[in-house]
Image (tube, rainbow, N blue to C red):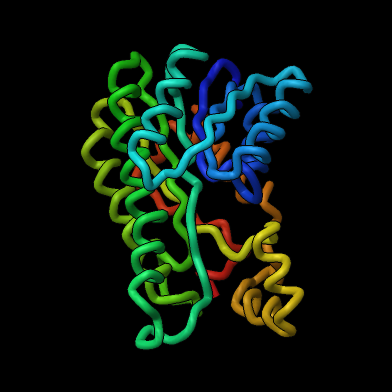
Amino acid sequence: MLSGKTVMITGASGGIGAAAARLFAEEGASVVLMARGSDRLKALAEEINSRRGHAVSVPGDVRRPDDVAQAVSRAVEEFGGLDAAFNNAGWGSMGPALHELDEDAYDVAMDVNVRGTWNCMRRQIPVMLGQKNGGSIVNMSSVAGHCATGASAPYVAAKHAVLGLTRAAAAEYGGQGIRVNALMAGSTRTGLLEPYIANSPGIEAEMTRRAIQKRLADPREVAQAALWLCGDRASFVTGGAVPVDGGWSAA
């Protein structure tokens, strides 16, 4: 589905990002992997390359414009362009009540989820504008971008903002061959979530209570939706917020 394409993936050192890296490479993409976890990122790139894929790792933080610019530049230098991007890096928490949160909780949620997405698009779009076939950008929102979910208020606000950025960019660049969509992912069984579930009896049941399928997502299931949006089979899809939540938002 992505044969001959170059895709940048943020938050690629684990969870949904790592699943996407493996899946996209299996589907023929050359992948540029960005995350703060440099050791895991390097190991993942080596794993993909050992399987005859094409991957480069670029350690960095999406909150830092220069780090993002470096990753985009590597895509151009190594593979000749940037056909798609999966802006997956994010930060979230369940957190206490809004009035009990400190300013840092708000700042981190906004900086990683919103500013990070903003930084990525600002540097990915100019490259795509210079290409004959444009490109596709997929931003990671959440069911929390649709309505309050029990997650912390700053996280809910940030994921709503990601949808706003996505729709605005889709409207601005749709006529120039760039599609921009978002995923509204439900609770997903990642390495970061597992310890929280193990130490909080009943939390998994609460997280899946509204989901029609009554289970957590596997990271690869979310990655499959991103794969489709990044590829040409979704050529008439832009400005969308695609739920990958086991029916959570429908219940």
